[in-house]
Image (cartoon, rainbow, N blue to C red; front, side, top):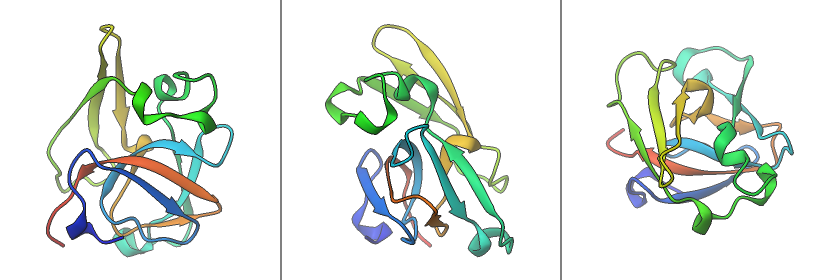
Length: 131
C-alpha cells in the first residue's frame, strides 16, 4: 500500500514487517491488549522497538480490542497539523455521545516506520501527503 493511494479517514490493515504508508491512529492490533510494536529507524535512526497502544475508548467499543468494527466507530477525530515534533502529536476523539478522549504519540503509527512483533494492525489515516 502506498501513501498516494490513501486519503484522510481511510481504514487500513497492515501486517508484520510492512512499512506504514501514512500517519495512522492505531485502532486495532492482533495483540489482545491493543499493543503494537514499531521500528522507527527510518525516522530517528534508533533500532529499538517502540510500543504503541490502541486508545482506551476504542478498545472498549466492543469489549475487546481484537473485535473492533468500523461501523461502530461513530466519532470525529481532531488532531493538530503535522509538525517537527514527531513524537508529540496531540488530538482528541469526540464521540457522538459527547465523550472525549485525548490521543497522543502513544496511539500513532508514523509513516515510514515498520510493524514489528505484531501480526497485524488496523488504523485510520490521519495524515497522508507528499514524501
